[in-house]
Each structure stands twice: as C-alpha cells, then as structure tokens.
Length: 309
Length: 285
Image (cartoon, rainbow over all chains, first blue to last red; front, side, top):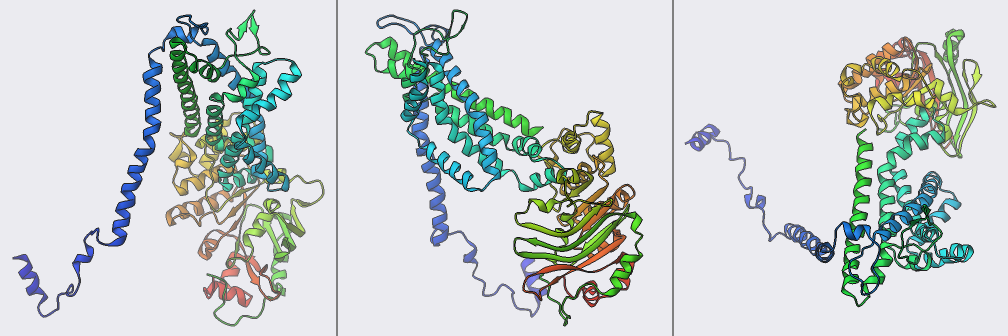
C-alpha cells in the first residue's frame, strides 16, 4: 500500500500532522459564525422574494384586468360619455406624452446645468441649493399643482397643458439635479485632470468629458423623474384638468386648453359606476406602466450604446 | 517608506556651490523651460523652496527624491496644473521659451497645450481609442484629417500595431500598460513641445515599464521631457539630466528643495552632496 511505503520512507521521522484536529476543517452549523452566515444568506433570499410579491401581483393584476380591453380601439379613440359603450383614451396618451415631454424640456437644461454647478462647487450657495433640492424631493405633489395654478393658471386665465407641465417639472427638477450631480461626481477625478492637462477649458472639460462620462447616470435620473411625473395625478387636476377632445385640433396643438392625461383619466374613470369606464381605467393603467417601462428601456439602450463607443 | 536617513544627516542646507556651477555649465540657449521656484505654498503650508531646474530641448530631465519631497509639485508647476489646488501660491518664475507662464496675461489653458502631461495612473476617457487620441485635436477645433493624426500619434506611442483593428473599442478595455501608452498618444497627438510625466510607470508591471522607458527615449528626439520617478534605475536608464530633491524638516513643516542637479551620469557616478550620496546608495527612499 502506498501509505505503508510512505510511512517506511518517513523512517523515524514523526508524523507532521500529529496533533492536528481535522474536525476543525469541516463545515459545521454548530459554529456560531457559520450558522449566522447561513441564516443571513437564507434570510436575504426569502425577504427578496417576499418583497417581489406585491410588485409582481400588481403587474399581473394590471395585465389581467387591463389586458382585456387593450387594442388599437382604446389607443386611438376619445373617452366615452357615461353609459356609452366602447371609446378609449387616445387623447390622454397624447396629453401625458406632451406634458411630460414639455416638462422634460423645461427641467433637463435647468437640472443638468444646476448639477454641473453643484458638482464643481462646495460654496455656501451650492450647499443651499443642494439642501433645497433635497427638501423638494419630498415636496407634496399637490403643492406643485397649487404652485402652477397660482403662477400659470391664474395668470393665463385657464387650465392648460402648459400649466400641467410646469407643475410636473417642479416635481422632476430635484430628482434630475440630485442624480445628475451624483453621476457627475462619480466621474473619476483623473479623467477631469487628464482633460485639463490636455489644455481643455472648463467648458470643454464639462461638455467633452464630464457630461458624456456621466451620461448613463444622468439618463437614469431623467427616467426616474419621468416615471414619477407620468404617474402624478394631483398636480394635474389643478392645472391641466381634463378634456374629452384631442390636443391637436383646428390644425394646431391647443397647449393653452385643458388637456387629458392618463393619470387623471384613471382617477376619474376608476370611481365611476359604469363597467365600461372602469375597464378603460384598468387598460389606461396598463398603458401608463408600459409607457414608463418603454421610456426606461429606451434610456438604458441609449446610454449603453454611448458607453460601448 | 518615509524619508528617514539611517545615518546622521546634516540638516538640509540650500544647494551647495557645486550645484550652481553645474547649472552654469548647461547651455542656456537650449533651455526650453527654465523653472525657478523660490517658494511654493499650499495655503499656509510651504511645500517647496529654492528649486531651480533648467529643462533642455530634446532631453529627458528626471526629478528624483524621497516621498513627499515635492517632486510632483514641481512638475505640476510647469504647466500650471497646481492652479487647480485651492490655496496654491507661488513665488519665482517658470519661463517657457523666455516667457514667464505665471506672468501677467498668460492663459493657463493655453500653456497646457504647449506643455502636455502624462499622469501616474493611466487615465483614458471612457470613450473609444480613436476618440481618446483625437480629444486634443477636437479641443483645438482641428478641421483636417483626424485619422492620419491619430495614426501618427498611436505609432509615436508604439501602440498602433496593437490597436489598429479595434480603434472603436473603449480605451478602458486596454491593459494598464497599453492605457498608459494611449495616454501618451493622446498627449502627443497635438504635438506639444514639452511632455511632463508624473511617475508614468509606477502603476505598471516591469514589462510595460520597459516599453514606456524605450518610448520615452524615442520621444525625446521630438519632444522635451520632464519626468518624476521614484525609481532610481529608471532615472539612470532614461534621463539625460537628473535633479535630486530632499525634504527639509528643520523649519517645522516638510518643505522640499532641490539638493543637486546635474547630468545624470555625473549625479549618479559622483554625487556631490551627502544627502544625494546616501539616497543613491539606497540608505533611505
């Protein structure tokens, strides 16, 4: 046997492993740190699954209840009157898209320029602005509506999609500022140094290095803000109200007229005692979720493409 | 390791007379950058004093010395990178082709286009290899054929053969040594006259280091190079001139100053100052 020859070869030399307790090498749950480790491993898995239950059940419910009515008809027609059958929420889709789009046009330039300033500066002003942005993230959305009501609706004399987008932009701004600032600060300082060392002006450094490198993070922030704004109801009730007609009428966009939105449509229809309207509310909810999802995926695809190049 | 001489060292006196003599020997007509730092502060901290280094055309000048002796600070003075540090103050002058770059009406951004920089950590941008090299061309609004310029710079940095088929890949996908050569390519694409290199090999393995050293020797035919290095052998291998800086702790702070400057051969074979002798013998690092 091999062991025998090995022992013989050892001759008079003592077994080097004598006195080593090999049971120490075995995995045992009786050892406290092994036990804690296994327990926490299990706990993270179970709690993750638990947390996913409400999420998935909500999505499944939406698919189940909203999927029934989904079709080209609901996407292209106007909301039905009470007791009327059929109809849809095409104007609300357009309204939400236009208002969120206009809100983006307002907030993205402001938000990103503010973020650039905050990321470069630690002055008192920057600190104050950052603090305000943090406070604004928790700003009750209904107050954003009141603000736009006071500044736009009362001044222009009527509910309008412009007022709606101003209200939404108040809600989007802090998210965009804070996530963009983070994204810009995450750009390694050596890249900034490299640009300055090449003889880049501060503007060139920001435009050619900091912003392109931070772009994925900035896009994430914009998408988060869009997702939040698209689902807001309260500020729109004060500002854009609702409309049963298309935004595009008489050959041009009626930006100064009351405008439909998916969120307000869901709010209005879900409480109605008519089956048709309730079904449409479910379908609208599904469409809203899909729109936000699509925007998210598009943003991610865009930023992934940028990073590859 | 901190600078802790093993044998007793007389306190850091200003450069001895022998040094001034060596400086005088260097033909001043060929000096591209004449660096004369009388005092340099970060806030109230005096970082460097009494350092005079002439950097000659098409030569490699190395700054050596123990950690914290201010050799990187001196190097960063030469293209005003220290301007970014809050509280930076400077007395003295840095003359580039006779003109003080700290003088009135000088734009530090423009200075850095004549005096380029390669950093300790390879720092390519998160974009393609091509765009990395073309960065400087874009900065200057270069309208001509970027492809030719990029190829020339990559060839100059001995990287062309390795990347010519993947110019659209991210610069960050390269190995550390390749990234550093990419940074060199980026720096030389705009054809600055002077190239400052701040410990360009300290993050690299020996093979990549050897490549960069060969590259430096080659580049010195077209460019004027100043390099900070922690590696004595490196200075010996590549540098035509070497300056040794040391830390003066006698006045409370840790102030770096130039102890000795000479042709590398003389400095390493026959160091004049006791600090230099000890440092070169490896008695402290």
